[in-house]
Image 1 (tube, protein in one colour):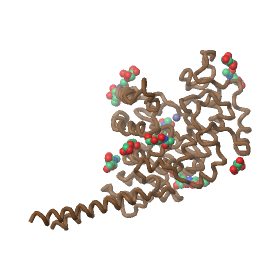
Image 2 (image 1 turned 135 degrees about the horizontal axis):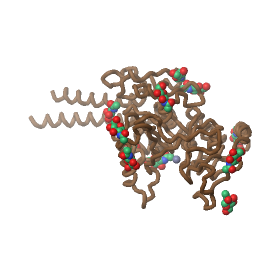
Image 3 (image 1 turned 180 degrees about the vertical axis):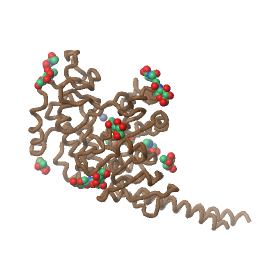
Image 4 (image 1 turned 90 degrees about the horizontal axis):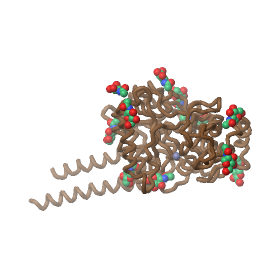
Length: 426
Ligand SMILES: *[C@@H]1O[C@H](CO)[C@@H](O)[C@H](O)[C@H]1NC(C)=O
Ligand SMILES: *[C@@H]1O[C@H](CO)[C@@H](O)[C@H](O)[C@H]1NC(C)=O
Ligand SMILES: *[C@@H]1O[C@H](CO)[C@@H](O)[C@H](O)[C@H]1NC(C)=O
Ligand SMILES: *[C@@H]1O[C@H](CO)[C@@H](O)[C@H](O)[C@H]1NC(C)=O
Ligand SMILES: *[C@@H]1O[C@H](CO)[C@@H](O)[C@H](O)[C@H]1NC(C)=O
Ligand SMILES: *[C@@H]1O[C@H](CO)[C@@H](O)[C@H](O)[C@H]1NC(C)=O
Ligand SMILES: *[C@@H]1O[C@H](CO)[C@@H](O)[C@H](O)[C@H]1NC(C)=O
Ligand SMILES: *[C@@H]1O[C@H](CO)[C@@H](O)[C@H](O)[C@H]1NC(C)=O
Ligand SMILES: *[C@@H]1O[C@H](CO)[C@@H](O)[C@H](O)[C@H]1NC(C)=O
Ligand SMILES: *[C@@H]1O[C@H](CO)[C@@H](O)[C@H](O)[C@H]1NC(C)=O
Ligand SMILES: *[C@@H]1O[C@H](CO)[C@@H](O)[C@H](O)[C@H]1NC(C)=O
Ligand SMILES: [Zn+2]
């Protein structure tokens, strides 16, 4: 009596295991050629193994070497022409800086050098004030520097599960290495800003080299993702009026911050994981005591590695309870046209907070309600956007998202196994 039962159970377990193997086998033969395929990979090691993407790889000879200081390539007449057209308006009486600041720099801070004095109100006329906070009350301008990180799928999946959009400040060299990861930001409805080509202290660069750092990061984002950013963040916040004027001439709004998580500053002694937790907790306390009741905030955080992304995930629920609204910086500014190309839009702040978090071809979050999404894309992006969601939160049959398909298969195999188990035992 007992033995046949045992045999039946082991048989059922065998079936379950085989079905599991099938799901696993499917994920190891990942599609590394498309945004959707790359976004479906869940093993961080697999995500971080290199792949080739010809549309970018074939153009790499027209860019500076990856992770090396940029300069205008000798034969790049487009970049040279652009520099020639703006260089006369770049101040020549603001000197190239040293890092750390030299002791003879005037304490009046004539150049509005953030690294020296945290100055964000330019002294040179014609430049706008840096953005340091989301202007709306109780609003966090949510964003992450230094991406795309090759292993970011778990983090972006998390944001998608929360129907949360953010601003990503992408380094050109990372985009060149991980173009499909960069594409995911746009497909998911996030905002992309530039964060230079090789992440230098910009004030230590000559004006032409600083121009090249910005120019090639913009061109790489355009090549890999299809859009040209109109915002940037200086690495280490290192900006002065000379660098601001170069960014301004390239149509880039300078986005800074007022609060810092220190998540990229772990140094093994004075700054530890605990320091970062403390910074997060202090920021949350500051939000809770009413500091942002009239003007919101920007908190510096990074898409740098597993730790920085895990911290973002860990503290997200507290952010949700401490702020009324968490939105991309561009949304907090009502910047509905975030790119040079006019065929891609962000929602207004009002639209976003009333549930319309994307207005152009983005992937539908697996458990969001379809009413909050209106996908209008008719180009290649629409291949990631046609998945619709029914009221019960399960993808409908029309889902064409590879990530959804994989999940479907997972659900399918587990359901089948359970049914099989029950029918076998009966
Ligand atoms: C510049 O020259 C390199 C070879 O040195 C070539 O591969 C590249 O296509 C050229 N770029 C442009 C913009 O002409
Ligand atoms: C640099 O020159 C401009 C005029 O071209 C002037 O307005 C500005 O005050 C000067 N800046 C410094 C730091 O001398
Ligand atoms: C500061 O000193 C350096 C040399 O050490 C010099 O090149 C530079 O012009 C000085 N800057 C000012 C503002 O005096
Ligand atoms: C979406 O689903 C995930 C996992 O099932 C869950 O953790 C998350 O809270 C859900 N998000 C929303 C907005 O319901
Ligand atoms: C809130 O907390 C911050 C940080 O502790 C402090 O600087 C600020 O003065 C506090 N504001 C109020 C309104 O209590
Ligand atoms: C901030 O707003 C909250 C909620 O409206 C209120 O309870 C709190 O007293 C306000 N704090 C300050 C410092 O204005
Ligand atoms: C991304 O994150 C992973 C995991 O923490 C790390 O190993 C890798 O060096 C990071 N960098 C890039 C450029 O992806
Ligand atoms: C961090 O790494 C662990 C182990 O690989 C992984 O399970 C987790 O999803 C990662 N978290 C993030 C936010 O990337
Ligand atoms: C954004 O638009 C809303 C509604 O039109 C307005 O109330 C708000 O002041 C605007 N915010 C900014 C920063 O322009
Ligand atoms: C916008 O138009 C450009 C060409 O003008 C195209 O390459 C790109 O794919 C379009 N993007 C969207 C989101 O339609
Ligand atoms: C994106 O949305 C804007 C405004 O709603 C619209 O004008 C544009 O045509 C849309 N672009 C695509 C590719 O759907
Ligand atoms: Zn950075």
